[in-house]
Every structure is written in C-alpha cells, then in structure tokens.
Length: 291
Image 1 (cartoon, rainbow, N blue to C red):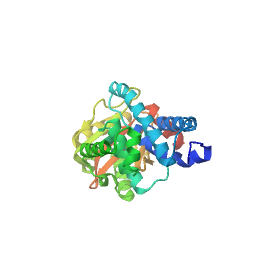
Image 2 (image 1 turned 60 degrees about the vertical axis):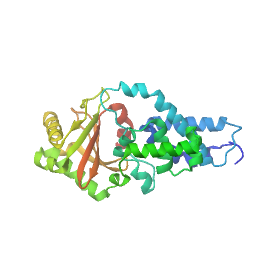
Image 3 (image 1 turned 135 degrees about the vertical axis):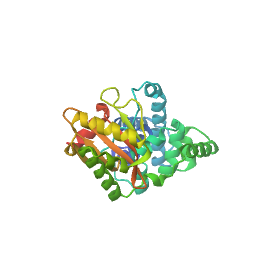
Image 4 (image 1 turned 30 degrees about the horizontal axis):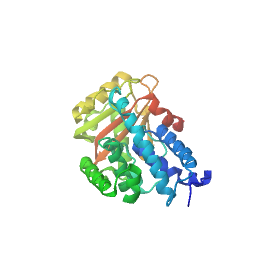
C-alpha cells in the first residue's frame, strides 16, 4: 500500500483492533470510540504517508492519540473525587484468549501503575504482539529505548498474566456466592470468600455514594458491604449476573441506592479485589446495553 488512500471498508476491517488498543490505553469505551474516529480522519488526511503495514500504521496513530489524551487528562485524574476505575465494558469484541486476559478490570487497574509511554509499549508488545520497530514509531523512541521501556514496565507491574485468567465456571460460582452472601447478610460466608488482605475500590465520581478511599482487609470489606446493604435494603434480586470486561460480574439495579457494577479479581478460589463503579457517567453505556 503506497499511500493512505483509505476507504471505509478498509478502515472498518481494523476498527476492532484499534478500539481494543484505545480502550486498554484509556479505560473508557466512550473516549476509545472518539480516538478511533479521530484516527480515521487523520489517516484519510495523511496523503503522503508511506504505509508498509496498514495495521501497524493505524495502531501508531491510535497509540499517539491515546498518549496525548492521557497526558492532557493527568490533571483531571489528580483532582478526581475518590478512586478512579475504568469504565465497565458490557460486550467486548470477540477476541483471542490472550486479548481477553488483558481486558479484565483488575488488569486495567494494574496498568494504571504505568506512564502513558510504558502502557503503550507494554500493550503493543505483550498483548497485541507488534514488532519493536513498529512500537518504536508509535511512541517516537528508538527500538533500543523501546526495549528498555518494556523491561521497566514489566518490572513495575510485577504480576503474572495468569492471575487474571480464572476459568469462567469457577468465577461464576464465586460471584453467585458473593451475591447470595450480600443479599442475605451472611457475614461468615462473605468473609470465607475474601482473601485476608483483599481490597475494595469504589468509583462514584463525586456523583454517587462510594468510599473515598480503598477499603482494605476482609473484615473491613465485609462490614462495609453488609452495612451498606442493610442500610439500603439490598436483596439478592437486586443483583444480576452479567459479563463485565469479559469476566463474570454483577449489575446492581436499585431504586434507592442507584446502579452499579461489581467486578472481581479472583485468585486461588477467593476474591482478591472488588471493583465497584457507581459513577453514572461511566455506567451509561453499560446500562444501555443491559436494557
């Protein structure tokens, strides 16, 4: 392909990949869609580009747009009211097992440890398996520097991918047990499901009730959840088993308490972390899909 003479069908063939990159970079389906659309416009306008690989070329455009977006949003993240969590995704594109393992809320939260450039290099190499030369162009670094960035990113993450790949049947059983324990107020059952050093993170965005700091430890999490459940009169029927970012989770619909999604990081048959999104701006797309 000698020049970027794109037509709609050629770009659409790459759209799922571009959205996958953008969503993992930004943690927002809405912003990812905007970036992909912007990439389409830029690709059509870049009349003089020499394109060896349309896949790598478009991935480069999307990656640069995402890095710019993350850098400009850094100040907003710093003043965000309470913890920030990724926007839950209801129906991800059909992806390979490798890609699916990098879509979970737990993995996306882990990526928050990385700088925008580190995140880009890590994702493009470890998840999307691009060549180092193509990744170097995407982040505007030399191939040698790109390899160093990848090494640094791996060291900062320090957690194996396998932790986020729990068999679906096992995950569903644990999520159902969690729903039953919360709905019935069974503190012993809930405690038995949680790792002793489990964490609960809730994102209300200043627009819905949520803990302003992570809740640490099984005992505190159980008291926090069941205390709120008792106050809001939650029942088991208020929670629907759904798929969130490719893994089993819960959608809470409650007339008084409001809506929310519960995602889980499960390890060794117990819950390591719970991620609760209550921010209505982040729930809009998920709720539209759930109707």
